[in-house]
Length: 225
Image (cartoon, rainbow, N blue to C red; front, side, top):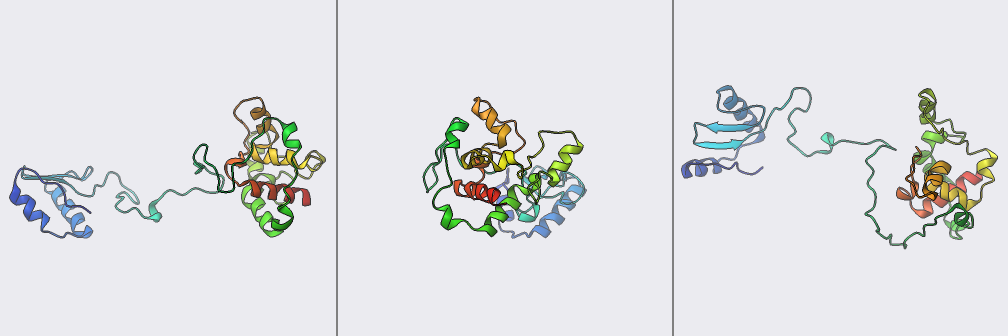
């Protein structure tokens, strides 16, 4: 904590700069000055008879944590899985593995197949965890589109509902198509993007959140169930 800026007299600057006040002392001082009419407890502004003006910790409101004095993780806002804001990479940044190719049409994605490295790097346990963290909330533990969020959407008549990934519509899709849907917000999201529009799908565009290898891992996991 820095020494408060003082005005009007040099002797007051010297005097207060020599004091090593703890936070507890400052709080007591703030309360005492406010009670005596020298300070504003809501703003922290203190005026000692025109001799010195400085700031002390303020009490802007009542309730828990009314005084935010420390930048600790305990006081920081936290976000649950799937909540924004998400920390995305800077625009046009290039991963160390090289920039991923982007395609404009589903026909172009349809021609893609699972990369050869997946035969070595695919780990069923890791794939199941990727699905649990990113997909289960909507598609459910058995991929039938009955996750916790799907139930809420159904109750509130919000759509489109998460897809049942066990149906032939998904299981018979080409690997590249599944990769496109995972990357661009599902079938609905990709349909919007393919027409040059912003996705309105409730499903995230996972190309912004997962690596290319992680999305191919999810493709392999869906096809293996």
